[in-house]
Length: 237
Image (cartoon, rainbow, N blue to C red; front, top):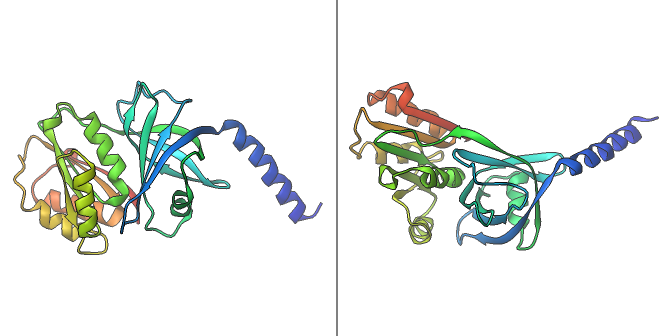
């Protein structure tokens, strides 16, 4: 049997196995932000219970054959089994292409929902800093933070219109910060150094591109914050 036929048979067998373990969610709505790469996807997930979502989770979504990307559900409602994904489609990859082509009524295939092991710890202040790729993660942190008054932070936005939309769409103490550099760490560092956070009772959660996360971690250490006060989750390079 030649290699081409063998590979074809392997692919068909893998698809059969994959389809047996895949769960499906219904796309309720898709909203593409004007002049931005951000795409919101509302989902109904009848095969997943959300009652025990006490940590920030991610959904391993099928975006192409044998290709998966992790997206964080935010704004979930356990009773209706609905949630929202935020996809930063500004990167040239299968996830961006998939999200850009989704429409209301589509079925979304996913392998599993797993925890990132991140949740707001019991401290006076929970500060989240991230970029457009981590909006879902940060909003999930906000939903979990109790009382809500101890939660704040900032999110990078690519332009003034996106900053305006962020303020319009969300009831949140998060401040949209205009991105003035490629990875955003200079912009967020400038914003961070203007804040007055308690050195002892503050935990920082850094999420987004790896360059921004690593540089912000260095800045916080230089400011005197300990390693246990900095939680990091890099998403892309």
